Picture 1 (cartoon, rainbow over the protein chains, first blue to last red):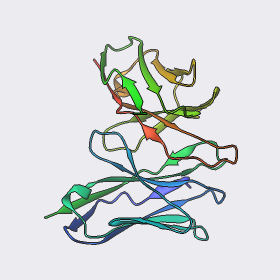
Picture 2: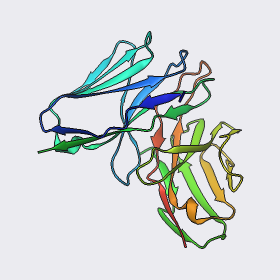
Picture 3: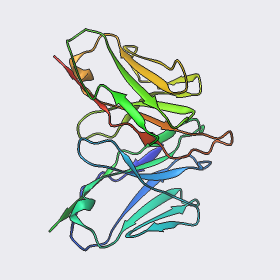
Picture 4: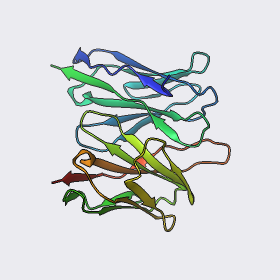
Length: 110
Length: 116
């Protein structure tokens, strides 16, 4: 089993749609959770950290479910500019590094 | 502004000719990472330093080496580049607490390596 797993997609959605991604992780002791966004041929950039209580930043909501070991990202009112790859990042088993998921591709179309 | 800087942004080398990529940071983070990313794939971790402690990934080829002479700088050496090593190389930093909690990673803009 991979340490961090994501549905690769692509998710093709119309503008204005709500879309959600999940990411599962294997390390039950993980303490650090993040969502990154990566545009084509650019470096990954932090979208948001994921806190135990869940957090929201504008149209983006991140949640953590420790019991089921997954984190989620919800995007409301999708924009064309949201088209990107979304990468989930979690502490590794053993906790000595951060591990990326393979990413979920989102394509928002007009 | 505090940041992660990578040089050069584009590197062209010949098959088998050693190349060194550099990364510097002004964030004073104790962890530095090197990733390889090929087209349409997720970043693949090659190795990372936690302070001076070097951690190699099990599947990183011996052809790839790294040095971290001080907190601010980290180098990636590719001893004999092959055509399959053409990729984007990303440097990232983060801070890690003794409890095992990490703050987020900050990435440099990457070095795009072409092997002729």
